[in-house]
Image (cartoon, rainbow, N blue to C red):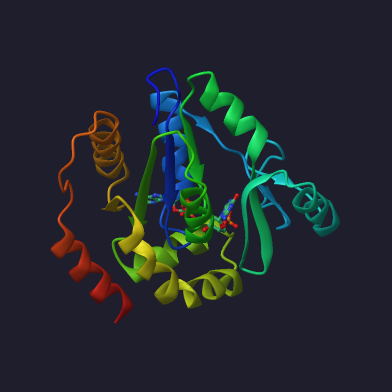
Amino acid sequence: MSELNEGIIVILSSPSGAGKTTLAKKISLEKNFFISVSHTTRKPRANEINGLDYFFVSKIEFEKLIKKEKFLEHANVFNNYYGSLKDTVIQKLESGVNVVFDIDWQGTEQIKQKKLKYKIITIFILPPSKNELFKRLLNRDQNDKKIANDRMKQFNRDVLHWKNYDFVVINDDLQNCYKKINKYINLKKKNVAFEAFDKKLIKEHVKNLIN
Ligand code: ADP
Ligand code: 5GP
């Protein structure tokens, strides 16, 4: 059972480009959450800073960390390794600091299966439309159409995982979306158990997205 003086875990997942990194940063800034900075073998984007956005490491370094069992979870996403180190996160949670993760569905499943004693809130982010998602991907990846297209190809598979999350939210207007996430976190923190989002609407939205 989670203790009052322990931190909670919030996990954000989504198809690539829907906005989870932006939202994780906002949660960190406005709610004083610690962001779990992942390790990855992907190359940094132009504006990314090592140690802040990710720890950028080689495949060999990453595999060494796997061998040493340093990861709380790790997965292969878009042909690169991504993983969250165990020690930093556990230290934070033990000292009462809340932690936000921006990870994919595979990592979420691994953390859930660990049955940690900390409270876990899982949130899935959806884009308003595929067109808008493509625009966001292009904008983020310096108009690299190949990267944006590769990520879009994965969309129909990734989006189906929304069903395994506590809450699902559409990231149309950023501030609105953040407000909803904030509400969901506060509800779950207080153990208020009710369906806070409209499942029927989300189901319909996903159906439209994948068609
Ligand atoms: P993800 O982490 O899910 O892959 P990002 O947070 O990197 O997505 O967002 C992808 C791009 O979309 C970024 O350039 C970001 O600034 C932009 N973005 C995020 N949320 C919104 C929003 N609500 N409206 C417009 N642009 C957004
Ligand atoms: P990006 O390359 O766009 O930063 O991230 C690609 C995907 O990898 C996203 O779905 C993101 O959530 C996921 N990801 C980032 N860090 C981790 C991590 O530590 N573990 C897992 N499982 N996925 C991650």
